[in-house]
Length: 128
Image (tube, rainbow, N blue to C red):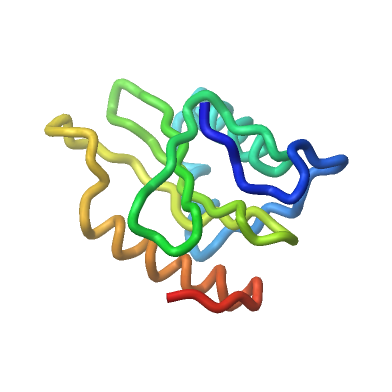
């Protein structure tokens, strides 16, 4: 199970959750069971406890996490960064409908990279 990078292993109170651009609207469009699983996983990120479905996305300056929930219509994902002290930033929520592989499509990775830049600006952090 992954370990999220926080100053304390478990936080006394949840950190703020910041939804970037359309990530909340996208998540609201998912089926109820998926929303429940992803919502609980994001809450766990807020309190410093990784969800069992959390995996790291590689290739970013900060540690970017992805949580997945399967649905008959495809796999739904929420991508977030929890390394900024004041908040957990939800960068993107999307549904991967393709059954040909588990890799995140390049188009989605580019969008995540852009939103990570926005999260850095909001958190006043410098990155690459």
